[in-house]
Length: 392
Image 1 (tube, rainbow, N blue to C red):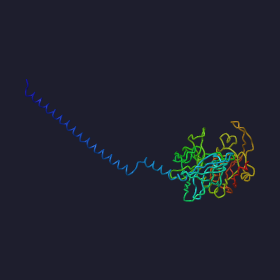
Image 2 (cartoon, rainbow, N blue to C red; image 1 turned 180 degrees about the vertical axis):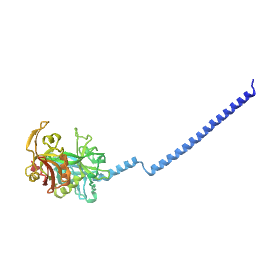
Image 3 (cartoon, helix red, strand yellow; image 1 turned 180 degrees about the horizontal axis):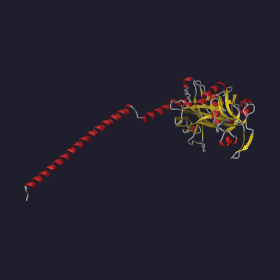
């Protein structure tokens, strides 16, 4: 039997249910409204983003366009060089490499090993036009050479020679040339390191070389290594590989050496390198202990070449032969070079880099040495490095 209290409870429950359903409906409608508002807002943002993309391309688009324009800008300056030799069948292609236009007089820079021994040199531009080239001169010690083509200045597009000392490890670079005869190829990478050393003619060394990871293969030799501004910071010249193809390490002659060598080669056909005339090895901890030296850095002079600037200045080589741990016999007791002018010498490369990039024949330098445990300063007048014929 229902009582008034029962009716009140039922009515109260019914009212709660109505309120609950009303709240749910309100939340549903509010959520629906918010969802519609978000959809409209998202659509507006998409339209705005699309508008911005049209006005200002993305970094990726800009980069791609810049790289394409980059190659198009330097393309007219790049050449393929074919080294031809006479045979009983006539002129035959012996080897090929790359090069680039240096000035509007028709001078073209390449590697010495690209043109070495040629009976005829042929230059082909990337537009397909080809010309015979005259060898102006070469420098075997820096592996650089200069050719010349007879063309009107308005058809020549030189590349600016940059300052390699302003570059840094990690900087993006581009190697352009004709690897495996594939004309006009460009590869991208970074500078891996500086001050590498390559062997040159006569047992001498090319120093201060740039190491890169941009792909360099046979045929790239003589082509430019460019920074992102399109300036030449090196001349691609060699790779380090067990197979003869690129394995991640390439080398380029730095533009600061190019800037020293090329003007002289154009003017005189050659370049005179400064020469000291000493032979030796880097000082090691063991050698320093054997010679009772407190200092643990420097270059030990083993021999002084007869009639060299070093001999005339009174530098001294070793006077006692010992056998070191690896079984080699070396002469000790010679002067230990620890400085040149205001530059510390910790190894042979320090000395060679300073001489190559900062001095010329007939310059006077002051060498700081250790002799008989005492530090001395000796003035040396540099000479000219002997030619290959003189060395042989």
